[in-house]
Length: 398
Image 1 (cartoon, one colour):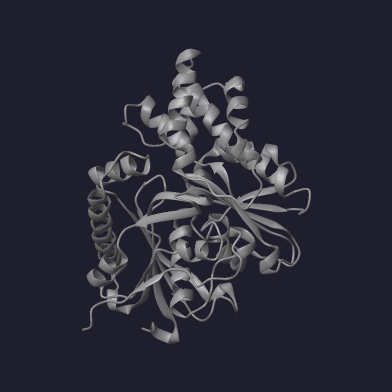
Image 2 (cartoon, rainbow, N blue to C red):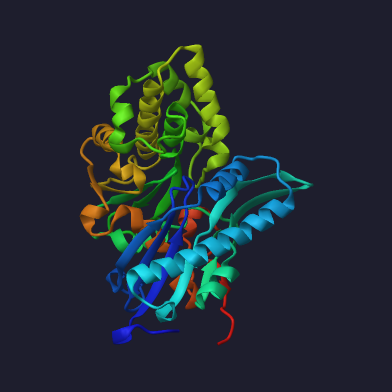
């Protein structure tokens, strides 16, 4: 294990989410076990590197359920592995460190399929997940031990493989005097609930439903791909809420399904957006009205999840928000209004840039893995027991 100066070590996390906005790279200094004190880890640097447009389009096509042959997935797995490996080298150059100073790289990979709950398949009940971006290539390109494919280990012991962020949320944000919830609004919105004075077994976490995924897709459609997201909620602010559409969307069964639960492009991808667009055509709705309604849907589905599954049992003083949705003023305003006395703050206000959070977390998860420590939260994923997450790929010998 390579040590950074002062006996600490440097780890690097890679994250590419459902929105495929770019490759997030976080450099993290870890002084000791984060289980002893979360302050032992600090973010040293962060950058987001762009996806090549053609690769992004192919990932989206496959993730939306397009018919593909196995060779396409295999080729894309290796193409992404090289892309992620090159991203590490570019980030290290920007951070002015040599890759050999890194103790480990943690790469979430790119999810192209996730089904957390088992369904009948060839005579048995099967749940599965698939993240691509071959970690062996990352290790070979960078010369650094790389941990990837984190989710299957949790699923192998009965969990849904998601969400994986709660273990670090718990370490970072547990508080002896007040209950907190940690909300990440990426393509999908997920929440970690940390009761006052929580132990790991009292933490719950789940995906609440759509985050930015539906909003972004409607913006791309309305602007013929000239814009990929609604910056500062400008389009939504000019639109009007469509109550009939909002009520139809909020009636979806997923919102009434109890935790643990996880969601993805399978629920809120292309087919879901096409239904919204079809409703808009039938009712002659303006694009801005659809975007505003989707934005309110994100906020109200999060508030509904908290009211339905959390607040009756766990008083909360603070909601800590990260991800792209933390930059959407309409989402934050709707959450503040819907949640009354709960203070809504961003992770940035607490010292961790929201865009860096997930990459930061996968650096820490990789560090836990190479030290042989479990890092799932069974109370969040539904797993029967703790699991050491990920698959370790070693670089070629020098």
